[in-house]
Amino acid sequence: MAALGWLTPRRRSATARSVLAGEAAAEAARKSSLEAESAVAEAEPEEPEFPVVGDDRAAAFFDLDNTVMQGAAIFHFGRGLYKRKFFERRELTRFAWQQAWFRLAGVEDPEHMQDARDSALSIVKGHRVSELMSIGEEIYDEYMADRIWPGTRALAQAHLDAGQRVWLVTAAPVETATIIARRLGLTGALGTVAESVDGVYTGRLVGEPLHGPAKAEAVRALAAAEGLDLARCAAYSDSHNDIPMLSLVGHPYAINPDTKLRKHARARDWRLRDYRTGRKAAKVGIPAAAGVGALAGGTAAAVALHRRRR
View 1 (cartoon, rainbow, N blue to C red):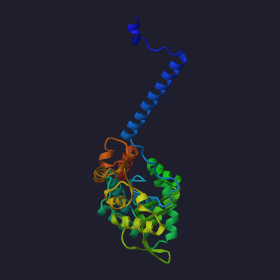
View 2: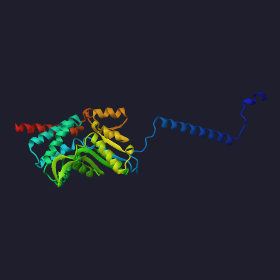
View 3: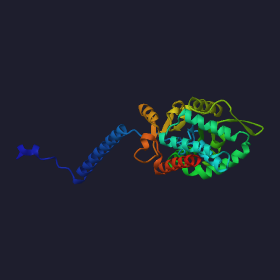
View 4: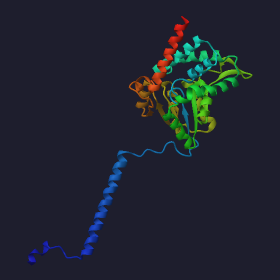
């Protein structure tokens, strides 16, 4: 039997053996847990908090048309002015067609946008700036308030809640943009400036429309004046025309993007958000069922007015 002694474990007290087993199990569990946490961290790196709370050198810049609001602000403004008899039916037909085209295409065509701006300038010529501002408040309630994208509105609010400033940057008249910014609780707006003398519109612009590269220049100038670090700022737009502005900041977002912007954003790993619904939304930018209804209504109105004039 002595020869088999090596097969018999050395006798220890039950308590000592239990302690040893427990410590070994705990150490193995701890090691396994740490390895699992490390693997998860390597597979899915934690995204840093954004927007950064309390970063007063960061701000957000939002395009307006089809980014914050469905459709184009200048078209909605034109509808409101027609209701108040600022112009005749033939101009309403023109505005209705432009709005229908904008919704169908989902992009800003320079020729169409210039045509709309020329129409608006001729309409407001001779009117007081204060008068148009007052009417603009009413038009916002009638035609624009229900067209704000909730998703984009939430993004803007996140920046505000973080203590950051938020501006609209748009080719729309600065007066209209300022009204929308104020109604949404934003910091302010950069927009196209129409010339006025003694508080009366002349029918001309100061410089050129705030479109494309001009938006980027406006953002750069405002950032310099406000002491902002563009690398810590964010910009949001639906249009490839705004790639210059989006490229300025450290956090570019493509919102309801047109085809060219979507391709550009994916190639550069920019973040995308699409708040449209429906089968064709991602392809042509029709803003959900409500947008389709508005498209049909706007087109029908244009056709009906055309027929009445014939």
